[in-house]
Each structure stands twice: as structure tokens, then as C-alpha cells.
Image (cartoon, rainbow, N blue to C red; front, side):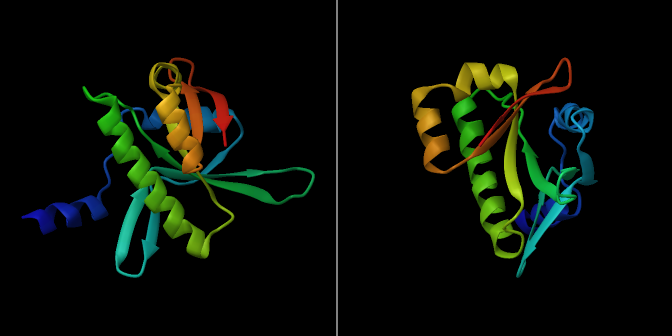
Amino acid sequence: MTHLIVILREIMPAKDIYHDAVKNALIKDGWTITADPYPIKYEEVKLFADMAGEKTIAASRKGKQIVIEVKSFVSRSPMRDFETALGQYLIYKALLSIDYPEQQVYLAISQKVYEAFFQKVAIEFILEKYQVSLLVIDLDKEEIMQWIS
């Protein structure tokens, strides 16, 4: 039974409840969404990040490419949500570094979650230790508030 669930997850990834708000915020900021979801494949493993985007830098005509993993942090345990999000983020970042080292991976979170949870000293330490890049979104306005690398 477990294998069936894994196979279904690979075929049809579930969208986070804030997926569309994050996507709209990126589009408003001039990004082109190039994949939704974004498949990550290495050897026998296939995973899906929430989306990928590209933005052309006018001066060089070379585009910046990003991969976004959206997390809502709506469970009763923000720490448990963080553990899951960090694990996904690190796995995606590691696998993408093999063939696509130019792609920057971001963890997209709401501004409210950023202010209430991500500014705790222990969380900031972990983010710095593992070089986690954040995309902070105002969900009501569907706007990017901060890029944190």
C-alpha cells in the first residue's frame, strides 16, 4: 500500500494551499513560470518541486532561473512543518546541483509565517547553516515582500 501512495504522489503532486498566490506574486514581479509543477529526476528518483520560473536580465539577455517550493505552515506544529520543508528543500537543492547548478532554490512562505516563526534565533541559525533561500510573500496582495538568500 505504501508503494501505491508513493507512485500516486509522483504522478500527481499536491499543490500547497498558497500555491496560486505565490505563482501570481512571481508573475506580478515579472517572472515567467516555466514549469508547474517542476519535475526533478535523478537516477531512479523523481520528485516535484512546486514550480520553476525564469526572469530575463535585460543587460545581459541571460535569464535567472529559480525553483520554488511553497509551504503554508498551517498544521498545529510549525516546527514539524519546518522539518518537512527543510528536508524537501535540501533534497531538491542537492539533486538540482548535479545537472542544474545555476538554478537557485527558494522556500516560499507567507509574510505572517516569516514574522511569527522564521525570525526565531534557532530557525535563523538553521537557515544560515544550511543556506536556505526564502521568498516571503504577502498572500493578501499576492506580492513579493522579500528575497532572502
